[in-house]
Figure 1 (cartoon, helix red, strand yellow):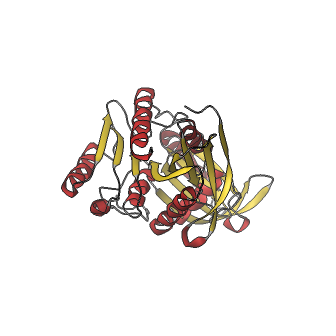
Figure 2 (spheres, chains in turn red, purple):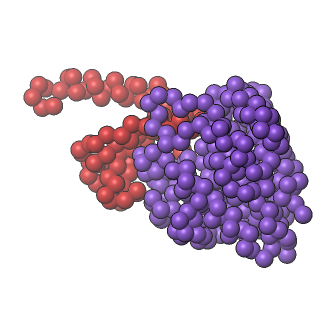
Figure 3 (cartoon, chains in turn brown, orange):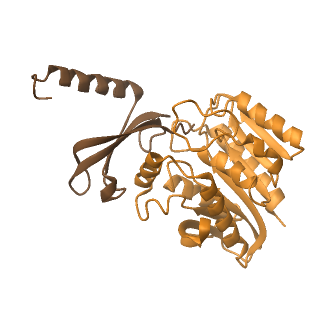
Length: 86
Length: 247
């Protein structure tokens, strides 16, 4: 099914797309059919800057297990970072 | 079967008279041919759906697939356009109906078509095919595993589209439904509820649900592909459209 399960959030940072880096202003996270990954459904992450157009996007499609592992790793890295830097 | 076909991108008038992109595939020959409006799935106006349009041309139908994301992301790659439209919450129902109406009008205007119009959609397009067939005067409609014709959208799902089974009495044409018994959206219970609504409304329909088959079984580039169901399903579609769109 097309789940349409989507969360969007404002973000601040950069991503490397085509042809170069761009400022990230929005992130979409959704669980649905991937475009490229060979799986029925994946966690799909789009780092975007809509002001620059639809092509200002860095996309990732991760299996559910991979996405959970990534989410945990991000939180662990943030927890381990020196106090005052995050 | 037509070995000679012509396929290209064209421009049509969609909802509100706005110009939108469309993929146009037709058999070479004088016709007259029946016509099919192909509704692309949520991942967009992509290579796989263009291949479906070309396949209809080889079967002797003039096929037209409007790019439902033309306005949102003109010129963008299909996956980028789909990501943008998803973030916006999808395609509004009224715009979808207007774009299918525009595609149907374009097809009827061609000198080698017979005026009969079918519509087909897959996945999110399955629901949109039903929506179009309950909104417009068409000659045949195919719903391939369309979710949320029946059944409430789960909480937290920002889908603009709600259930539309209450539109069943408005269905203007015969309906072919192709489903997988292992699918959850639509589940066999959802399919049964739609079937009961069609019975109650006295509509002509044909449903086929395939065992050991889930969602997206026609998608030959995805792990959900089920060759037996897809092959049999294509035969059903060809037979259905030949009966209702032929001369």
